[in-house]
Length: 399
Image (cartoon, rainbow, N blue to C red):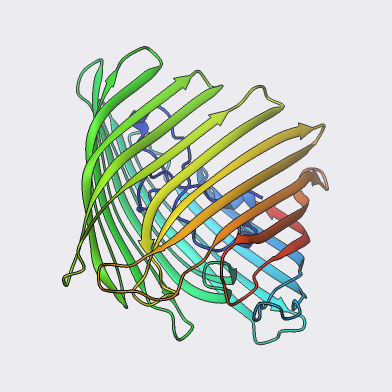
């Protein structure tokens, strides 16, 4: 089970780094509240391949708490069956490229027939890598469904992100990197508000050693929601990149935020951080680590912003023809209000664990896997109990 770890130290969804940066290490984004188990796209079609590719997958899952109720109530376990079809296309150019991707899925809850149904996602990516300049643009849209721990229950929501990143090699030792992005989330359930984020950052990197590049920069972001005062943040950042061949890579950013709220909401100071580390010890095993620290509008609590610190450690191991993936994450959330406002606390602290074991079968035409995911709120005052686990099997193929 490979969650989509998106490259950005701030609140913008930029799935890939510009090619001129030599490598791209995935960083954690602001927590969405959904678990990684919702991503059932067949692996052969979830990445943009050379030319056309198609995928078909099916999964049977038992969720011990598929429709969370009030704290202290009995968990509502259910079996969920899903079928996914996907397609992707990428042009064959080396200097310019463009790719499109899309997937449609249908999920059926055996006991809670009012849940599930049709879902979909799609995107467009384009890029240029010529000489000293590399540019990458991406657009993505999805309709997500499932238990969302940050909203305290089953949630259906529309999500959109768009990003543009560029890297320019100024000289042999200096480069300029810039990123711009916009994203929004719109829950369908009544009582929850739409939230939006726009962000920009630029940094000048100096190659201090053959392996390390580091430099200062500037970042700006704007967060808003249907029930929130607009939050404007700006301030200095420091970005660093490190690469040791194909074995070790790191990309990290830390920044100071000076915050202004609209409508007389006052001012504040905060900081942001993003870190991604990838370590491939050998062809047999590797590890990765992601960290995120930032503030986003909380669509589940009127007027509130959510200050999050989240980290995830992953491990992968080849065992003959099989691949084992293990991951553990911890997430700390604090509720913040502009001056003059107050209210309920949002989501608390969460611990997650995921494991999967997969291998090719039927002459390597089909990937079969079994997976386990666990989630628990460690500290918080949530009115709904989203603790639970998922256990399932999945078959997928691509052509």
